[in-house]
Image (tube, rainbow over all chains, first blue to last red; front, side):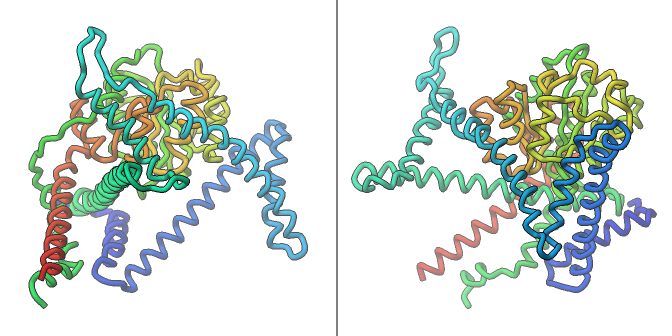
Length: 212
Length: 271
């Protein structure tokens, strides 16, 4: 065991343990650590934002005579007009610009990447052979599963036709497939949270206590 | 209260204590549970193996924060270790404000081992604007004019042949949320044909899988497990492999509790 002598390592360990104390029950130590975390995160974000305005706006504007940077600077300042009584409407212009920009950027690209190209990816050979003509059972099974999986899940969302008879069976199969997918998602959430917990335990064991 | 009901109302503190013990013991005394390597991880490894160290420069986008670092930082380290081992130079960038802190940790370690900033790797730092910034950087990778250490990119040989994101031999997004791998797919992969893979947090894996199946993602490292798999491929032991035993034990404990809870539930219903 090689316990750290650094004051900051001790502060870090104390913060981690204070947050973990919530597992036992809500307490003032946890509340204090939570407030410190929220405050320092907000402070860091403001520091980064000011740094960015300086790096990408102020420096080019004042040292390289790139005067067009005055436009985003003015738009940014206009956002604060919402705090001035009678001039709050001014802040709607930069917001309109931001929303328009975001929609313009993502409208086509989202449709293309997440709908058209994803749909195209399901148009594949159902019976797969390799270059030598040998039948590939695994790939064939995968492709069948992918194509029919997409079709039966889509069937579940057809609300314009009464879901009875064979349609109901297919729709139910789609529901089962979705439930399986949700199960996978849940499993991944658990795995992700365990990874985060492990990260903190590992920090305590290595940097603070020095046992590994 | 009979024992079936008691099993359904175990105090959460008992569960957390068992989980904590189950996670800590394998960290101190590793068991060495075997690990199978996914195709998604193998694909990233293969692409990096096929790169030419003389001509190819890799772009690494550090889009995560300390909050998600335990799940995804080991992947970043494993990829950098592979690039270092092969002598491939890389450029770092971030579209998350905390990203440069993450890359700084890796760069400091490399410098301590004798690698040179500006020769073997550089970091362009954080670019504000989220998905807009990714779109802009994809079309004009010289939009960031100075790196994190204040050097103009005209004085950085690594950026000599880089005009757009397509000029990088391979782009890897290490991402924990938004903007992340999907913004790269929308703004760089599909419109420009950039060769792209991602190292993502475990939570995002089911959502990212269809992009791997469609070929929009060339490869993927799935959270901490992905890092451990990558370490086993490169043969460079890191934090991923060290933590996988503990993660497996943690999963077993959770599965056992779910099974016990369900068993007790059905038993109490039967009665």
